[in-house]
Length: 136
View 1 (cartoon, rainbow, N blue to C red):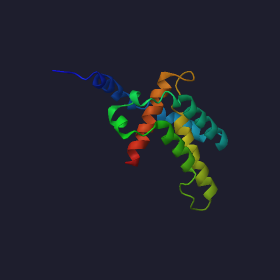
View 2 (cartoon, one colour):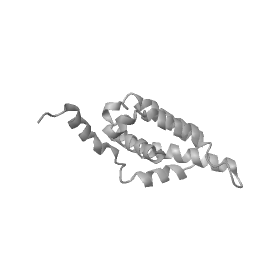
View 3 (tube, rainbow, N blue to C red):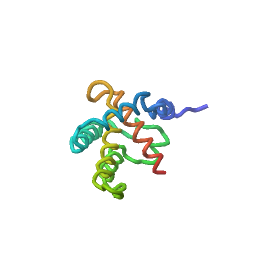
View 4 (tube, one colour):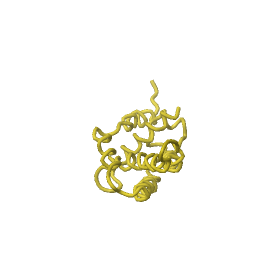
């Protein structure tokens, strides 16, 4: 039986899509801090830039590779369009700010260890895949 060398590489990447156990609490902790939304957004954008090169399609699970959706673009769109969510209710500015805080906090909750770490990369990949499948 002939084996495809890329299939073994892809199967090892299938485990990349798991968020860390403490992700939810970390995101909430970041969300409720008093950081200005502009600061959170700027730090989230820095994370996208830092990992843009690492988001090689070959490092992502095979099902995601077939979609050809670039993680950095999904993250950027989430940040850019979060402000368009839910400008209704008694305080539209507050709702817009909360949407941006949520997206930024989730992205920043992926940080594990030193800047540029493999664990952070894997957490960011898991988050972007999670958001992507919710779009479908």
